[in-house]
Image 1 (cartoon, rainbow, N blue to C red):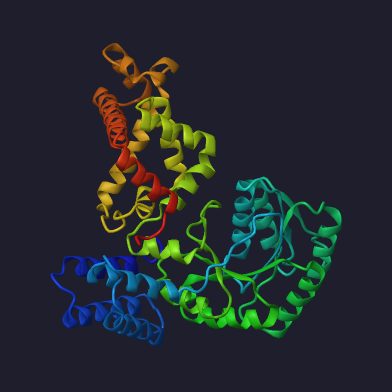
Image 2 (cartoon, helix red, strand yellow):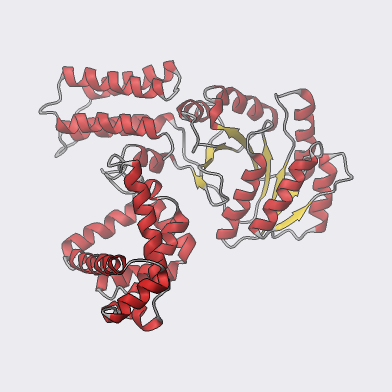
Amino acid sequence: MVLDSLGKSLRGVLQKIARSTQVDEELLNEVVRDIQRALLQSDVNVQLALDLTRKVRRRASEEKPPAGASLRDFLIRIIYEEIRSVLGAERTFDTRPRKILLTGLFGQGKTTTAGKLARFYQKKGVRSLLVGADVHRPAAIDQLEQIARKVGCEFYTDRNQRRAEEVVRQALARFPPHLTVIVDTAGRSGIDTELIEELRRVREVFQPEETLLVLDAAMGQSAGRSARAFHEAVGLTGVVLTKLDGSAKGGGALSAVAVSGAPILFLGTGEHLDELERFEPTRFVSRLLGMGDIRTLLERYEEISGKEEAQRAAENMMSGRFSLRDMRAQLDSLGQMGPVSKLLSFLPGMASAKLPEGQLEETQARLRRFRAILDSMNAAELADGHLVKGDRIQRIARGSGQKPQEVRALLKYWETTRKAAHGLTSNRKLRRQLERQFAQGGPPG
């Protein structure tokens, strides 16, 4: 997960509060000290960390919890709200066809982000056009063209043209207006007059509805200065923070950009074209503190499998009609949604329950073995797993290259999952609570 170290430290603070017998001055001092240490270790600005903890201390000392809320729950709520406030206001992002101008320095990930945005719109049913306007680097144009092929979207450039604004003008004239047009521009090693003037000329021709700055999270606190400079020069509507899956601490970039005046709209969380997340501070902090983000998890599943299939699989599981075919569809979706470690961060209370690295690898390997076994079953067996016994187990094991005990392990896993889900949701009161939790998808009140 993004900022895993910070999340782990903050969840430790919440656990300390939950385990305490009383909320007193001594506990408050410990909590404030632990929060400061966690923020500073994640590269958050010193003054920002001090201001945040001062607010936590003041509110905990002066405010009274609402009727029915314990002091422990109230303190946790204050910490959640103050961390959330550091990350700036939420901003909606229109998913109708748009004109998007990407800006940024060299090596920040603009070209890859252009492809990720095209994939983002593709999932929403909107066709995109990628325009290669980096007239100074032919390799960047080649890379963008390859990405466009991967995504399956339109692409345009003019390799003989040396003026970026003319490339954009040609693209607008050649393609219909109902496409989302994403323009990838040149970068520099630093912000200079030549870069700003070129961006201004492109913006004048393009008239973008979104001007996004792409920033590498490894820049740390200096990301804020870069965001502010671009914002003043070309009027940013948002920022995309990239490479948050790497070794960068991330806290400096997130907090610095958030106070620069340009809202963070997306996070790049990996190298693949699907690894672009909408940044919504409320949901982000919920995951950071181990409160989960069920809504994002469901949205990812629906993007991959389609709403009708997601609804059908859920209904089958709840009603006890969950077949091996349904299980195979779910394994396919889980594989596309990312590794188990990433999925755990979306579930309430599971982010802190990290599995050992070896156990995570074994879990991934077992899921792959299960998928191979399911591929060796015929239609009747996928529809009714109870048919799989005796000689069928032997045949399926040979066909999948697995041992018979692995086939039996899969059947046991399927039967346990089917019964547990049906039994859990047969309790009406609990079912209503689960439905409300899934619908709200936010932190506890």
